[in-house]
Image (cartoon, rainbow, N blue to C red):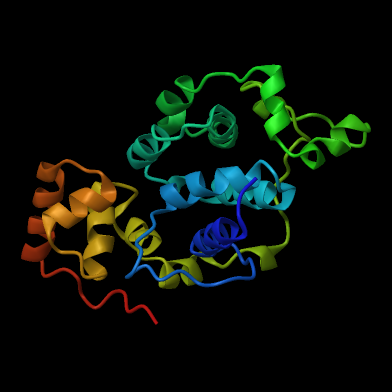
Length: 228
């Protein structure tokens, strides 16, 4: 059971990924939530709401190259709930992106009784025979109806619109999904101190210092991101 306040924050995080939920837009300057943190934050909601699960699945499928695999591994290592970890494993396995193989190989299969944490509506269609069970999720012990990608374009912003709202996505489109892109994103938000960057992104101080230094030398940022 998650509180209304936490649900609202999760929806704000997902809106920041360009999923068109009704809710409050994120303020990245005040709270710089990375795509990886937004995905992990959403897992408690996804296991009790099929719409959230389906839209999160679709976003990951369509945008997995915009996920920073190393950063996701760091964020995922702090997940305490094994069911949520298993769901993440299924979502990443669906992409067939080899960058996630190390992470998914560390995720343990849950026991059958642990499926009681998952809202029954997520397996209803499979239980009544309308749809098959999800074979990818079952590799991690998760018993639920097979996921499909959402076809409605109105559920998601275009990448251009996503990039205008989310500085992490904007910088990853420019630099690739790596540490440099994420440091660049924070610098557009006013976080120029290596210690701040280290704290927010959980990077080493050396990585934060090296990237902030080289980006400053290049004159970054160039007026790239102006949050409204």
